[in-house]
Length: 111
Image (cartoon, rainbow, N blue to C red):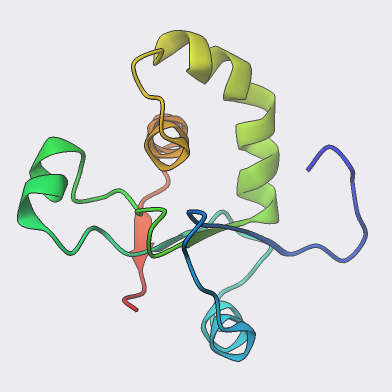
């Protein structure tokens, strides 16, 4: 975000073992207006993970995407989120906490 690259619409995150298929990713993301705040992904496939963390949290294992406007908001508040949620060490959990403060719900896209 801080690089202010031209023509960036989405930021996509995943774990080190997440595989992304670019054609599928583009097909899914073009359904949404990148000028609005979107948090797109899928909750965990395990019931326990959804209880422990949140059913409204996108998990990094499946990967998730945030729109540029949402990424800008997170960028401005991330340092504060890190201070407010020091127990959240996983990126997906920490990003979810910040996004929850903004009131942006998870838009579920399975797969």
